[in-house]
Image (tube, rainbow, N blue to C red):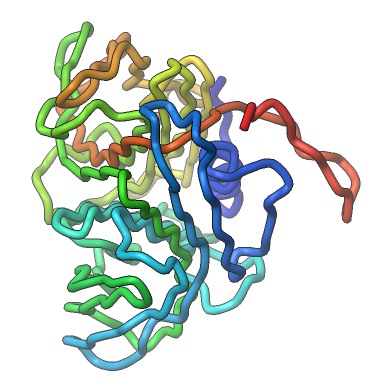
Length: 340
């Protein structure tokens, strides 16, 4: 299902997918809180304790190059880091569309970012793909902030901002650790013909894989910044559960601003495009298998060699699913069925 929407709502489904994938039932917190999780003994590949910490920090405003050390309470050296932001300094709704997200395994990092200016005609939108822990872009194809992961340990992780502005941006993170947990971040490209696509180089059989991508037209190698905005965020696990959300905002001189969004529970990766009166998934792939050195996706729709970043995890529990948000404000909602 694909629908047109205003840009300000395009990032909202992300938190639901992350929480369903990673958290135990009855563990909820605000974005700025921290939480821990210990996986049960019956993890998919006989995992021992798995640790998670969720938190947030304010980006330094110092001129680049700027080192920033972020404290955490994981209690062990992390195996994976996920960073994301809407480019705001407050937890409120604001004009303009900005979104950025990145993965790191401590050695390899990749990030995507998108931005679209509100209330302008013609449209003005940009996107970026970089081999960094996080990248933040502005419309007009302007890079405003970008950081590499320098190091991490049991109590901190350190970022090096190679480009930076003076905005005190709020950035959120998830740290994943555990003695038996394995993590691998890698970059690959979508195929140009339908069918099976096997991705290797992971080094283990994943239990859970996250995917990030920009629009279908973002095909150049990192680093690259180009007109048009959009992102895809998706997950799949060894049980065959999967889900994807994607959006796109145009950037065509003299054109009326247009946007489209989509979500599917029968696909593990996708990219939307504006076609006809609304939009559609022009790239779509479903989970096929996990292997000893990677994973396989079955592409039913292709539109070019789109760049993709994946975070593969081993010996973690996950449950992927969907639920409907309540209509009433200030309503407690129980989500069950995780099985652990």
